[in-house]
Length: 553
Image 1 (cartoon, rainbow, N blue to C red):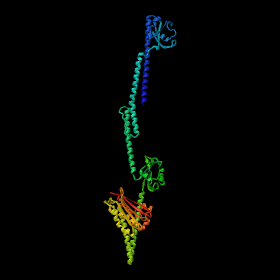
Image 2 (cartoon, one colour; image 1 turned 180 degrees about the vertical axis):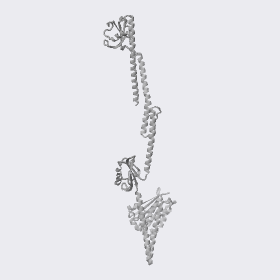
Image 3 (cartoon, rainbow, N blue to C red; image 1 turned 135 degrees about the vertical axis):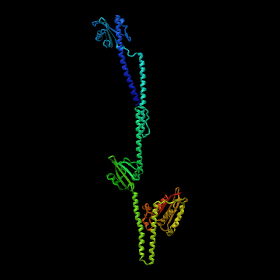
Image 4 (cartoon, rainbow, N blue to C red; image 1 turned 90 degrees about the vertical axis):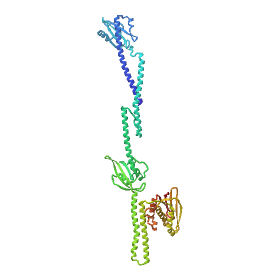
């Protein structure tokens, strides 16, 4: 653009100079012709008054060192002196009528353009003088250098003017271009600096105002988008927005986790990533009722789906699908149902026994039989009491009652538990090997830790055969206190391992060994209250190992 402006200005100035020079030359030419005619008339008057028409005398008359050609014509139009081959009645007739006549024309004899002036005598004769037009000096040679100097000065001034225009026009435009480029590349804080009060200054102010408005709108849009994304990210339910072709507009992280999607699939068709007949059926239908479906991929889950239309004004532009993972809720509902059923069953069994034997005692007179029935009633009562105690204990643990914590050494508590269960182990001739390598205290309740130790060791005794061993190991690694209880008992089938910490869950082959089915559930909740974890490793028919980990102080 800079070159275009400079070139345009220089061409314009030169064109103006050409027009001015041409006009000036035309004016000079007209004035020169007029002066030449006046000189020719004066020369005619001089010759007429001198009454000397000799050739030598006439050669003394010159214009710009060019001799003037004279022609003398009598009253009848006959040439007495001078050029006989070129006549025109114009200047002759004008001279006879007006006293003087002029003409400018081409002389074919000498092949030149001529200026003629004719003057009449008192006796009717006419004297005509002429000179070639080319002899006139429109520009004096001495003045030519001044003309060239002026032309050069004007040319330099035109270039200076062009550069001035470039600075006044191109630089603000270039500044505007640079600012526009920066804004287009995300730098919304840059602005145009044009301080003039002309149209460019007004354009700069308008552009800056537009940039301010754009930045404000973009900031507002980004703020709304960030808030919307924050809400979608923090939602504990999946949200999928689809256009009318089922292409994904947005999908929050919770929805991606539900369907096992790891990458950004915005703009993709949802059917390419979620292959489930029930879900596809919901997406294709116009029914907006809430439904529950089961999916198998990537994991088995129960989902609650609600679809609704997405409206822009009066036009439906797509659908919004709300997804809630109710798998855990369904599992808890199932566990609650099973818990109620199990509690009813576990309570009903001893109550039925107590009621039956107590009613039978009314008709039994034999002392031995009566004592036997009373023993059974006592055992069932103890079992019932133990079951209720376990249920209350588990309920208190699940209600997360706040307890005062204390520091204690766990190995002493483990020794107390071993001593409490010594009679049970001796009856089955089971040897308990305790390896104590811990010197760190842990934080919790001693009575709760004692209950954990008793439950783990008692289970090991209960589900071990006679003449076997139980290995108890208490130690610390770099960050955890660890308690391991290993037995050589019947072991736990792999399919039962995930459920052994559930309430009332007992392995089928272990049911005949008694128990309430709440011991491990209580153990897990106590360990959870300690901030620890419990794991089980078992080989069926070989034995089981329970590992309890907690941070030590």
